Length: 124
Image (cartoon, rainbow, N blue to C red; front, side):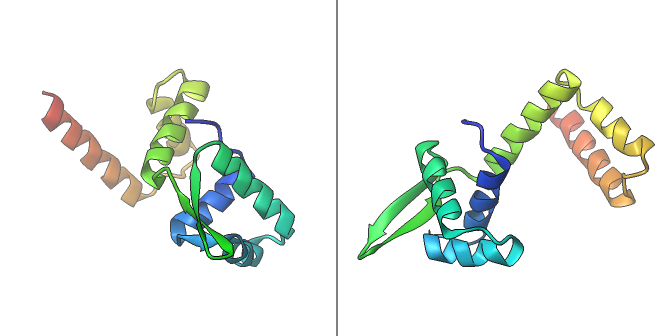
């Protein structure tokens, strides 16, 4: 998977929310959050097409764009990349950092316990 910039990710996120979408649809959606110039969004779309993260089909006189990678697959890839880069592939220092800064909520802890329990059942 090729590296996707923060700006490209914002365009891809908009596509995950609603696709297929024309460039103008995306411009309208993204301008609610950030006032980007039309050319900026079109440039970002072209970069995503070149990176094979986004595809398109021509419909009459406009192009409709759609994601070629799933949100969950991309999230998994980026999560693993972050953990490899910052924590030498270990998850516990990341979670410990959140715990030390009191950023873990009871809901997070419950979900983590559930995930660990499920992992133990499948890997014993």
